[in-house]
Image 1 (cartoon, helix red, strand yellow):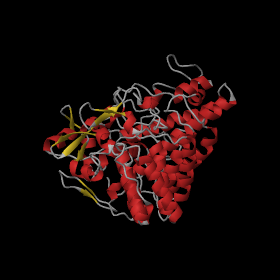
Image 2 (cartoon, rainbow, N blue to C red):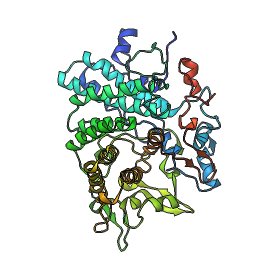
Image 3 (cartoon, rainbow, N blue to C red):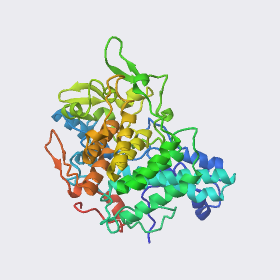
Length: 493
């Protein structure tokens, strides 16, 4: 069997694992680090790279990028804007342009084209596997080793969860055991088959990674790109939510919230524009950088690879936004959206939440997500007590987002179970608009709850209807050519 090379090129130029060198080299290559101590592996798992270096994909918090681009969060207002997203600096990007139409025209990822999301996520998995394999043989305290392995398993689980929800059908109880997922990489082997594991098998591996990692994750970390116990529970809650296992999603969201339930009060966090009723940005004295954002319990960022992923290209349909948000009293409206450009709002959350420029959206796990998983799980489980608790979770989050004195608490007795579930779904979209979760929500709601949601493109008129095969993204031909056992998704050449 020929050696497979799907993700290691960029990373291997920076780092050689101890295992790889033991197998192939007797001497230490000049200018490259062969990790041999827990301090070395601490550096491996802290490899966050240069944030301004577009294309540096194999850092520990650069993940995926396409999901915002695929959703109804991302719209186009006119032909000029449409041409802009198809070209960066006047250069056509044919591998990206068709993704605005959900790859229906099949003109992407030709034989020599990398898929930046696949490359980035498997690159990060390689970093994680390097630590899982090498840390036990390194010098250092056993307690430190356990913590590093736990961090690596978290990162590996995060990437596998993203991969299986981008390149495979959504998990369903009837299809998960047979639907093709993605290659499952749990070691450093370069000769192992890359046959796609079933969706259920991938989910089982994600859950196993997180459940074995959480006991060894610390309660707090010095930097928030390092996962802690709360982020472990949060990612496990997200995984169970995507499976439709609402009891386990609730259990893990509660465990995470028992560790940290911190929420910023936007009234005291955001700056009020002098002489107006508007608020426009977080105060620099509160949080100047995403690395120190206390609501963000594990920092993950969209893959830095294409100008089309830049937030400045993201336009949001004004009618949708004005219906979704109270654009007078909901402070998230002022945080997330800028000026009105024709029929669309510009998107500005990144520079408004953090004064140090953030180029790409944050997709990591957060405290607000745990509150909303708690609320949705309670509502779906049902019963008067649970519905009351679901509304309480919503109110706890929402009161911190509205101008003081304007927020009116939801009252559970005023809503049916289905209406409360819809309140939660609406709140997820308000809270996470532009933060990379909408695509996964749309897939799960259609697959598990028969939500019958269609995405429509305002300018081109294209639609993505429930059940369309293009809810699953294609795998680049380059990887299939290198490893023929990776079978292409239905509907793609």
